[in-house]
Image (cartoon, rainbow, N blue to C red; front, side, top):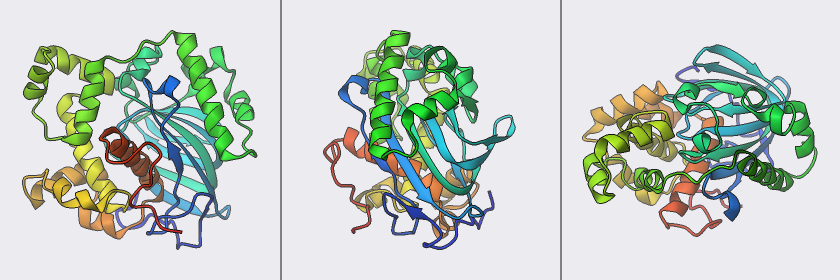
Length: 323
């Protein structure tokens, strides 16, 4: 991804079914899962964007959760851990990213995403999460063919020509089947507590967290590594960077901006850590558009605010552009 050009065009180059951000990027329809899936699923989101066939989004992804995506439209190219991958009309498992993963999409695109909570992949008897970092794996290659058939069959069930609200309901039904098929156990409450703590204060001291939750520190470190695919220090650094990125992209609550910036010792500390994740200084990042990345950042921020009780589930998001 170029440092100073995402080639997403002007505001009229893309038309999003769910509206646009103040910066002119597409918005998603995103919400919490149904109660039956709440232990394992963090967020569901749908994106439906119209653009000319030669329109190019040159952006990237950086997520702290694995995401199951069904790609209905658009020609995707991603620079993964093992090289360049090309994807079109497919169901795929996007592992978490250790830093921004360059992604391009040619033409208009439509997709549904299901972000999984820490510990969910192990509960579903999926791959070792650290092995999925910075990778995109066809769902067929995990266990999709045993449960739902191949990607084409899965896409047919979603009915790409149908309404996006239906896609969300179909996704929930399929995930409930996955829970039943794998006899999934709920993730450990300690992992859930750590996940919430990362949202509240990614500068937390791990020793204090371990003591407060009556768990031996080394055991906690092992649990976090299994659930997130990374060490606690890496998880917390990424959480800080994602919160800053959301603010710079205009998809976070401005009332928190100062407090989130103060998580860093000084400006040089912020620039150094942010650049390590996004290959860009905060200033240059803020000056550019990040249409694909902003969609994922917004879904994460919406969940974060709900988890921390700052908005009601399904409540209005303060940064959403007014109609």
